[in-house]
Image (tube, rainbow, N blue to C red; front, side):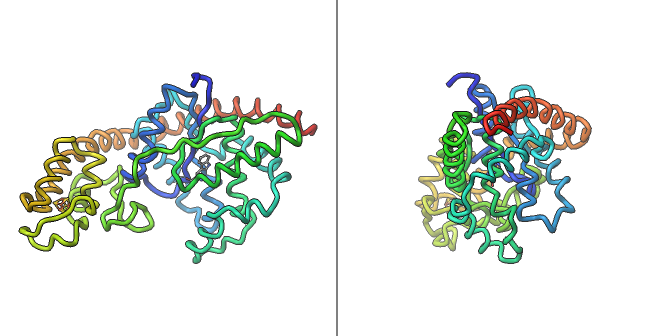
Length: 328
Ligand code: TRP
Ligand code: SF4
């Protein structure tokens, strides 16, 4: 684990980040900053693979994502934060890799068919969408990243990335390390309806939500369905509100909810109010910082441009090696 080992990860800019992203991914990314050389990319080309027909909000989403990242503690002095499409080397590497990736490998990636079915309202029979994991591989290999912090849903893409790296190395000589995923143990946060927190379910609490909205969302959140009346005992183990307590509340609050819910010593409104007592002090400074940053769009754009400059240097050096190896 040397400071020279590189980490790369990215998000598609598809809307504002919610507190599930904060706990699941961003806090992990933040903690890696001191131990590795970190590259974090806002992957706007990846957004295009499915949203090619709806680009009107894309630039705004990129900006919002930069605000969310900076607010969550990604630090441009310690990490390289940039927009994928500003570093053309990703596109060149994607093209070169596309030559050596058999179609069968791509058709077999589980997310390919799944997403086509889930987004049945879009035509996803396009070339770019099939190549999504090749582009992701280019993002990673352009920096020779050893580590890729991602959620469980990205494991199959990482496996493919390693296969592509191996195939490149065996055809042209050892250029790329085989990147490993770094998954977090934090469970996925439930949203207000108890399903996984997700923008598409409309059940998310956003980093950008005002306090009144956070309160309203938490107070209307589903609980243990067996607690119909205040006097009914509940079971925190199956209650999504309790999962949020585990992510945000102190141990003593968790312990007391765990006891009092089971003997109907507290009601769900009391319980949610306690949760807000822990959640609000975490979100308030973030919200304030986010608002302050939003007032300085030029500053945020400068950070991304400087990041792209730093990223380009590293990626350009890799591409020199790649062109040599391919003899082009
Ligand atoms: N596919 C990732 C996701 O949907 C986003 C992503 C793009 C990414 N490029 C990457 C993740 C490179 C890790 C490394 O979440
Ligand atoms: Fe859930 Fe809390 Fe209500 Fe128990 S008291 S059911 S943990 S919201």
